[in-house]
Image 1 (cartoon, helix red, strand yellow):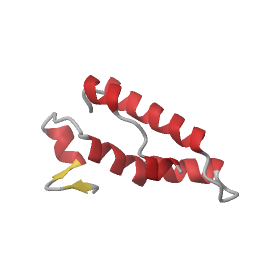
Image 2 (cartoon, helix red, strand yellow):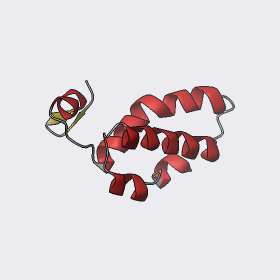
Image 3 (spheres, rainbow, N blue to C red):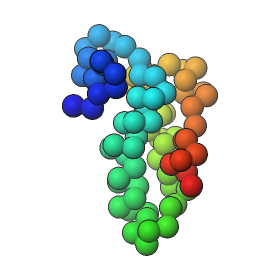
Length: 84
C-alpha cells in the first residue's frame, strides 16, 4: 500500500479525504509514469509532452472522482524533476 506520512490511499478513500499535491505526485510516479516510460520512452529519451498529458489526464480523473480539490486541480503541474 502506498503511504504518505501516516495516511495511505485506502484510508483516504475510507474517510473521504482529499489527496494533497505530494500524494498526487507520489502516486503518479509510482503508477502512471512507468506506463508512460514503457510506451513512449523505449529509446531512453524523456518524452515531456507524453508525461505532461498523462499527468493532466491523471489529475483530471482525480478531480472528477473527488479525490483532489478543484483548487488543487487548477494549480498543480507536473514537477520539473519529472518533466526533464
